[in-house]
Amino acid sequence: MAIKIENVFYTYAPQSVFEYKALKGIDLKINNNSFTAIIGQTGSGKSTLIQHLNAILLPEAGTLEINDFKITNKDKKTSYKNLRKEVGLVFQFSEYQLFEETILKDVMFGPLNFDVDEKRAQELAIKYLKLVNIDESLFDKSPFDLSGGQKRRVAIAGILAIQPDIIVLDEPTAGLDPQGAQEMMEVFLELKEQHHKTLILVSHDMDFVYEYAQNIVLLNEGRIVLNEDKVNFFNNKDISKYGIEKPQLLNLYEGLFNKQAKMYLSYDKMINLIVEEFSDVK
Ligand SMILES: Nc1ncnc2c1ncn2[C@@H]1O[C@H](COP(=O)(O)OP(=O)(O)OP(=O)(O)O)[C@@H](O)[C@H]1O
Ligand SMILES: [Mg+2]
Image 1 (cartoon, protein in one colour):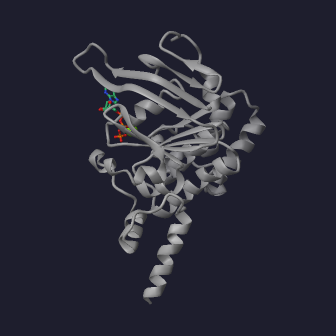
Image 2 (cartoon, rainbow, N blue to C red; image 1 turned 90 degrees about the vertical axis):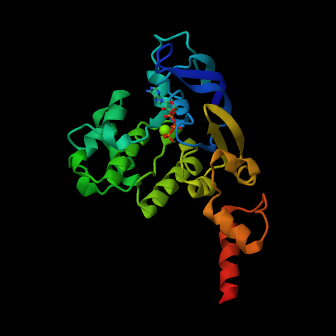
Image 3 (tube, rainbow, N blue to C red; image 1 turned 30 degrees about the horizontal axis):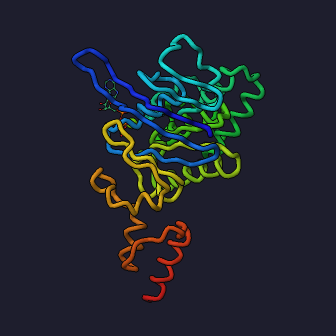
């Protein structure tokens, strides 16, 4: 088990007029080498929850066990540097967090911070910049010269270069063009499949969630209201009352064949069936 969260509560600005109870008793287990999507309407607590995973936020009550680390409210002085080597968190709007003179230096910052030597930090930076499709000709440019989508990729490379076991991504594809977003999702899948990472993804894109995630956790007003494998999840009638729309592919399949998608149908198989159906029409 990579992650075990028990009865976690979190309140912003407690005991002030701005007090807001953002998490209200979260229980969640996440296995090693799994791909979990965390979804929910805006303000449901997704970003708040995942910021607990590398102790950027500490729980007001409850505990988190992450690999060999235990996070509670009691030990506020504990240094979580070693935890942050194991859990890499890419923030929502991470493109605003680049700060170094050059792109290469920005991505080297993480490994250097974890005492990797200069040469190895550079190797890692180059490897992960290439993985997220940043061309070598840009490495010496200022991050501020890049487009929003490129900045996002550089920020993601910066976390991947630390080589964490658990990779947590908050809306990593928001604002990317459709092809760029798909390529990025393929990179995440490869990290799970080839490099045995544990992936946790916050996303509003139900088609990506359906295509790539194994398990889906639905948050509503600071509580987990559903936590299921993806096919059961999207066949659950309750999701619409939480404002969750079915993936377009599922709607298309169900419209074409006039039945609910079966549990055993993989994403690829469903696409094949739809393509076959359309080729019969011709
Ligand atoms: N720093 C803060 N101070 C006070 N309230 C906050 C703060 N950050 C978030 N909140 C509130 O906590 C609630 C949960 O916020 P959170 O950012 O976790 O939601 P989210 O599910 O990530 O939303 P989104 O989909 O818009 O990113 C929201 O109502 C938000 O307004
Ligand atoms: Mg958020």
